[in-house]
Image 1 (cartoon, one colour):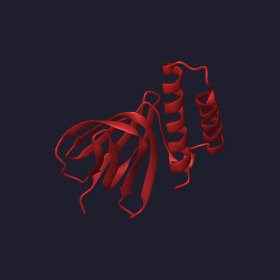
Image 2: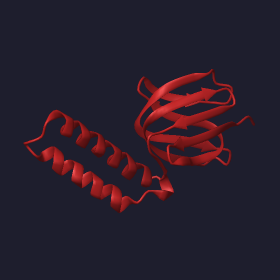
Image 3: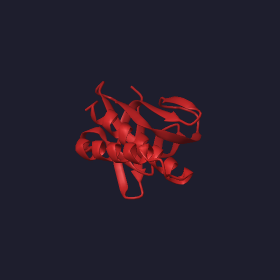
Image 4: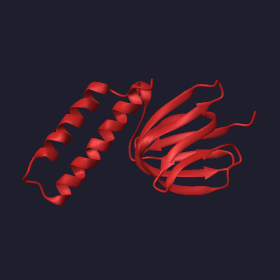
Length: 135
């Protein structure tokens, strides 16, 4: 069975390393399914879950907060602004972040920049909560 090497890296260092039968990620242009031997590709990612289908038939979930995916026939590298493996997400902290972002969005005296930041923070928190539920 052919496999593809997967690496998820943030500015703080590697978050996930392993081999997989398939990697699924959500790029800004749409959903990507990457198998061994895939043509080279670079694409920007959205705030979403990356699914790594490992050789044991299990799926590992990694929450990513944007970044890029680089695909080569033998390797997938994800360069993310922030990333967490499902089992390492602190759900209470993610829920607190979600509540703070919702309060900021509910405030009436915001400028567009604050609203945009709050919306992104809300998306990141919801993504982390959703990924943590898939442990």
